[in-house]
Amino acid sequence: MNDYRNYTTEDFAEDDFFRRWVIAPDAETDSFWQNFLVQYPEKNTVILTARSLLQAVSQVQIMPTETQGQRMWAAIEHRTAGLPGLEEQPDADDENRWVWPKIKRPDWFQLAAAVTLLVGIGWWYMLRSKLAEQPGSYSGLVAQSTIDLVEKINNTPQPLTIRFEEGSTVVLQPGSRVSYPAIFTGGKREVYLSGEGFFEVSKNPQKPFMVYANGLVTKVIGTSFMVRALEETKGVTVIVRSGKVAVFPIKSLDRTQPETGQPAGALLLTPNQQAFFDTDSDRLTRKLVEAPV
Image (cartoon, rainbow, N blue to C red; front, side):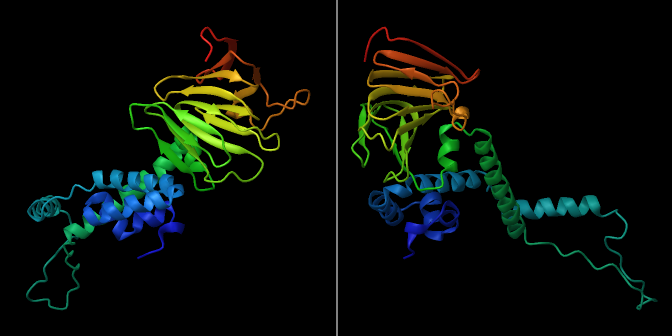
């Protein structure tokens, strides 16, 4: 069995055993890959991306039957029969006359497979281009991550609590998802949210906690707050219960204000304050919470 721990998205998409699980699953493949995801949760995002790729490609693999292929090729031959130079027969009295070679009919299924491969490659690059055009979106940020991320999805009707390795937690509401590294390395603790989550962050002044959600960044050291970034809406809401939180558009991440040390356009929120970020206008507004969390 292959060592799948170091596989990339492309490696999984090309693996026969993985393709069998995605396209024609059975008890053996389903048992193996479900156990693999339990043992190596950090590969969840890579596997989900590879599955999506194969499923999308399979949708264009609508192969005609052999009879349909023969009929289509016959129609092509019929319509091109009158074109000059495609095929000529030698005269009986001129055996040395040079003739155009007869075009060999290609194998229909090989041709269809080649076309499908090209369509699949085109779809893959189109998908990557779309994600690159949306740098602040959940899918775009996850796709651009240079490290493996663990993704947790709340497919239950109840809130789901996720605990990060350094002790912080997030309570995910139904239908929400969060991606994060198995171990926070470097000088920041970065997570990516789609949906609604209530965070309680362990205090660490040397390593701020940053939540990316639909174009907005919420930066904290140690506090509790709620982020609502539903995909079907055009905005993000952040409500603070304790501590202090800085929120700012992701576009301002690399533009720091010298006088405050915070990114340009950042708002500082204190307990029972909330901020709303309009993703269409990139506008941030702040107000008091009517019903404190």
